[in-house]
Image 1 (cartoon, rainbow, N blue to C red):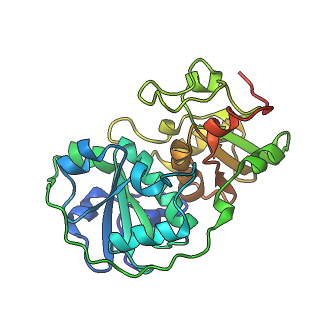
Image 2 (image 1 turned 180 degrees about the vertical axis):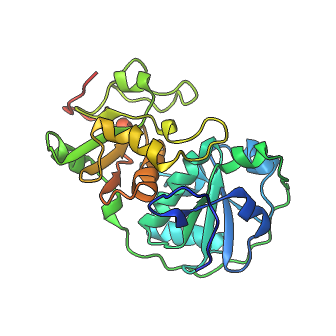
Length: 289
């Protein structure tokens, strides 16, 4: 396997990160695909992207168009084929919002069993701060055959998992939303006004550790292992616990899932992608503020 220089920091799985310098010197090819993941590709990928990268549009490509769910195994296989990805392809993701949506796609890749998947540390933010070049030319991609593995349900929490975990001392909930969402003052960030729940607040006994506290403000890169441990351990989010991360619709929580599982090496971490829009809309679910 190709070794990628990332940094001197001792993450549990440093192989899941690559740095911008390495990307700049190692363009995508037949066995390596670079994929940009955007919430808003019109103001991201379409205006300029790293040469050779394809696009995965979070809203269109990763969410089922009808059901409140991620794409199915067949839909995932079709998406991989359109991006020229085979099961053996090395895939490197990067994107907007400090890789927030890239982390969600990373989770989906792992859910369907793609092993060689990485993220570019810092995403678009770091690339642009360094003054690196973009192009508006889209690569000519030849469709590739793809057969996904069965879903890895050990990476995903459902409503019944969360209900069953209430009051369990061996399980800890991590609410990665903003403090105002956690307290119920607001039910969605101002920039996402259509994604409300009927009730504000949080799942009982959840710990509020906003997703963005895991990255450096200056360039969007992940904080050091020691800084990350200080972010989670004082609130009882330790490696001996069964950890369930959630947010509003499951994307921000996938970022924290990535940090806990791959950067800190926690063995039992799940992403509850139903998150607050499911929990806060269900009749009878307990809510704390």
